[in-house]
Length: 322
Ligand code: MEV
Image 1 (cartoon, rainbow, N blue to C red):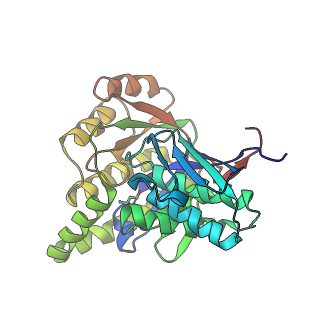
Image 2: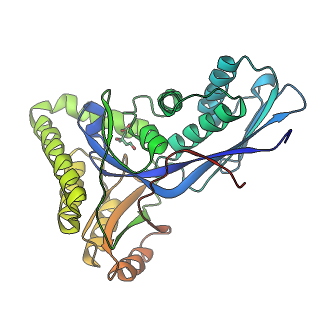
């Protein structure tokens, strides 16, 4: 039909192990979650490009020189894809996301991936997933300055991945049964770019010590791969706890995050850790089905937003029924 919306969606993520260390080339493991970002696109009758984010409550019309700061990364994606297609028609792009922004759940990457995929479909460019992932990465560089690329990769491909910066990713078998992940919000705002640069600065001052912490993270991540393949939830929980300790060592925890992590563990979680850049955002806890309600209730007393999630196999996709 002439002017129907095309909808693409892409998942948020949880980093199970290796965040921050991944920025300096160590491996990390990310899993896609059920919360998704959606991009709606259609042609307009006029020649304007109009971009609107429902969650951020901002609107940009780059063809009229109106560009809100929050939408600069998305404008760059639109410009890039429109240029590739030589299209001179007006386009309307609307963004709606279930992923809380600045949470460590990869909201900016999921939005970027969904936008690139929706525009690709509208303009019939036939870009492959690798190209969509790369275009989203360029937008991530605008948002986070020095991202490792793990967020746009997991959001594009879904499932569980072992990622190495500059070396790509490998899908990992996930055989943990009868367990869920609980995500709890610290309520503290933070900025991934700033957290990454703080960690890099700490590393440059204390390399003699921290290089061992980075090596420990490398070993830990490979053991997490084993735990996931074997379906060993006890081992995964232990490794999440150790990973949290390494993240504390590089300075990305704080009193609120520690409170959430300890409340989760004390109420029955097998493991709990910061997920993402830290400094704020969310923690992730691994719980078995029998202790799920107890951990949820305990976390609700200290966190204003608590979600439950499982692994999502789906990466970016065009939604047929919109
Ligand atoms: C990614 O969600 C979190 C960090 O590892 C930064 C990155 O990998 O780009 C802290």
